[in-house]
Image (cartoon, rainbow over all chains, first blue to last red; front, top):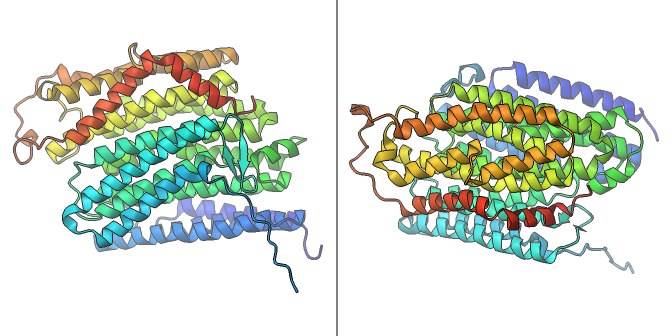
Length: 102
Length: 492
């Protein structure tokens, strides 16, 4: 097997997952939050493909391709919601969405 | 010359038919949204979605009858067994209830899409419970979740609905991403995706493997709205259209808990010592957080949302027990819980349609006398949640505690009993405001637009929910036998 070992792929995937998690928790704009969610999903994809290469099996790669399709569907719903928000002139800020609380 | 021979897997169409029936219903509803004239579109879509759910339930019952042995289908990615079939019957039943509850909704736009998404969400749940590997688990989860995100936000003229949709999307996707990363780690530790293959591949307590398992549990707990992963539940339940809340509270919880049971017992039996403690801790957290937060609520939908968090705690006790009595207890508990939950939100929907505004304990005052049927039904549902006799809720709790006793979790039983005692206070607060407080003459409680139109579909749904809630008390033995047959397909 050429190139860096699986450990490196997993290390990068873990760092990406951490960045994505931090983004979802700390950022206030729903757009950036959606972006961070994509980073989390892609971190998992990298881990899947890395492991797939280690085991020389295609299972992980098939999984990663399915995840990409799902991620696209998810982001379509998210962006659609954000468009609906802007049309109703609602603030695009997660912290000020407080109509529902108690 | 190249001989083109691709080994095609044998597809068991009968096992897939419940999900396919609902997909067909969803496609027909979407076509109806374009081709059927507006005047009959609501009737057409509701009839198609209702037929789809009924057909899915009947097909799942046929699968239940014909699958005494567990079979793995399509490259071991799907499971055909009685556990999946029984849960599919439940989901189909809750779907029919949701269609009936939705009928009287004053929705003018997106009628076809609404029923299409409801059927699609049901199809996703039915696919999800038959998942046999980590890929189908993730696909099923996202399939029904994405449909539910849109359903929650479908009332685009209400800010609350949009807000709930975005919150559900963000927190739900976060949970899915955690589950996905856990799946990737489990795959890395074992080199396998199938639940049975993972069980056979494990040897040592690899940290990668345990981390993967923990993240899968957390991801599923988000969907089951168990504390500390429940923070979306009250906001989403309150903001979503009430029929959608009724469907989510019953069906999503049922599938998430059954799949949690299946994954943990099938894929991770050697780590049972670790996960049963983790599940017990989540159960206690759900009981404590759900009950304490419910005590402080005045909005009835939020109160029921926190109550659903604490009910998830009871059902997680059954999973933590890790024995076949626990499996039976979970499957039995889901029947009265789901019926009572869908029914309670249906009663809230009835009051909401009369008032045209949110239902709080104050706006329910004296309503039980005005509307004796709805009041009595709500009474039954609250008693079922609290676990009073003559409702299935009592027997469900009894079985859950028996399973915990058999597993030696005596402190879980103590916490469960205390939680039940606390929960009586807020469940009876609903009954108290229905009957014990006379309605004060308040101008803001005048029914919008005079006397409300009768809604036989809603009354039928509530009546059916009452029958199931009470009937599950009197027909315990047949139901437990069914649950016992379903649990046989798990390797306890």
